[in-house]
Length: 168
Image 1: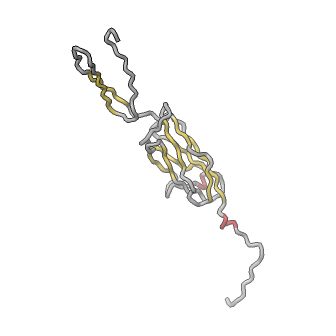
Image 2 (image 1 turned 180 degrees about the vertical axis):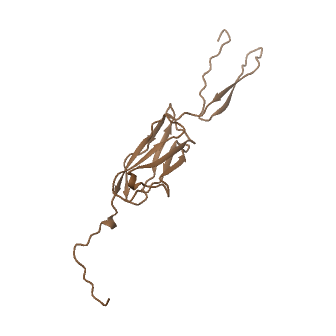
Image 3 (image 1 turned 90 degrees about the vertical axis):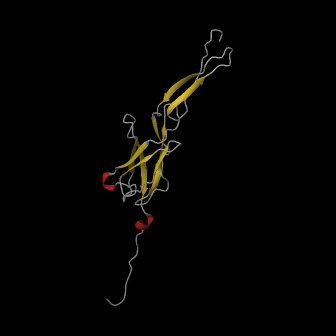
């Protein structure tokens, strides 16, 4: 402007670290360039969203779809490279598994998503999986409730007697 001031607006990208802003002028006489360094911190996880809420599968089988959550910052942007913990919590006498364990920790990808493959327990009851972000204790954990359907092969019943003949 007429008194030599210039207002600048700068929006930091989604990469943390140092950002250098170079201020230059094409005025006469020339004004030397001025550098400013701005430190951009890692994005803060402010929201944990369940990507789907209706999961169901067959007892003692891997779910057809992986459990999926998304991490977002306060501006609704994806947060990557954050640990997400999935934990089978109920029913206690029939916990489902992530491989051979009742819990699984992974990292969110570039879209902010974290996924886990889950095998239901042996009983046809609702299962619960708690999902949390361990490094953000104040962020409330979310829970998936998963319907476990009986295995149709295990439900076959014989309604007529079978007679065997032969030598024992």
